[in-house]
Image 1 (cartoon, one colour):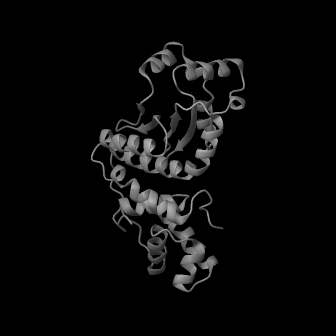
Image 2 (tube, one colour; image 1 turned 180 degrees about the horizontal axis):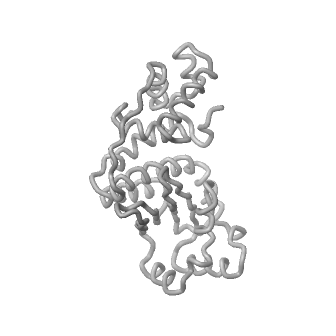
Image 3 (cartoon, one colour; image 1 turned 180 degrees about the vertical axis):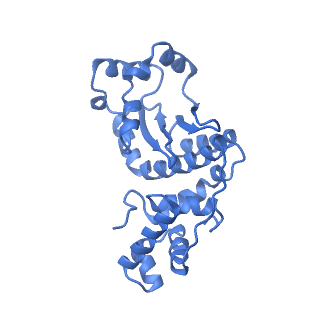
Length: 252
C-alpha cells in the first residue's frame, strides 16, 4: 500500500524544495529562523517547537523555541498550565495531529486554559507530535490569530500534509545541531532501490514508478520497504530526507 496518504508525491517534492534552507542551515538558530518563515508561508502567525534530545553525558535536555507572546509564556509557566495542557499529554501517547477544538479540551481546567490562550491572541492551532528515531519526544505547534474556526479548519485541510513534512524536516535539522553527532554510514542500495529512491524524491507515486521502471506496484512497494528498513525509518518522506542528508541524492 502507498503510505503517502496525506500528501501527493508532487507536494512532498515541492515541500522538500521549499524547506531546503532548513536542511542546509548551519545552526539551530538559523534552522528555526527558516522554520518560522515556512510556518508563516503556510498561514500561521506563531509557533512553538519543543523536543527532548540526548546529550553527550547521556541525559535528555529540552530544546524549546517559541514565538508565542512573552506574556503568555510567563503566564503559562507561572500558573503551571502544562499540568492541564492536553497537547502535552497527547504528544506523549499519539502520533496524530491535535487540532485545537473546544471539544478537544475536556475538563473545566483545560477549557479555562483555552479561554485564557485566546485572550492572548492564540485562537486556532494544531499540534504535531514528535517521536524521533533516537527516542526524542516533542511537538511542533502552529497557531493563528484568526478566531474563525471554520476558515481555520478549511485551510488546515489544505496545509496539514505540508505541516507534517515541515515537522519532520525541522526535527531532523534541529537534532543534528543540538545532539552529539554520530558518524552515520550511508546504507548500500541495490540499483533498483536507488532507482526507486530517485523517483520517490522526484515526487512520483508508486504506480508511476512502476510504469517508469516496468515493474509491478508490488515490486515497487517491495523496494520501498527495503529502503525504509535500510534507512531505519517508517515513511517514504523520511527515506528521502535521510538520503539527502547522507549525500545519496540531491535536493529535487
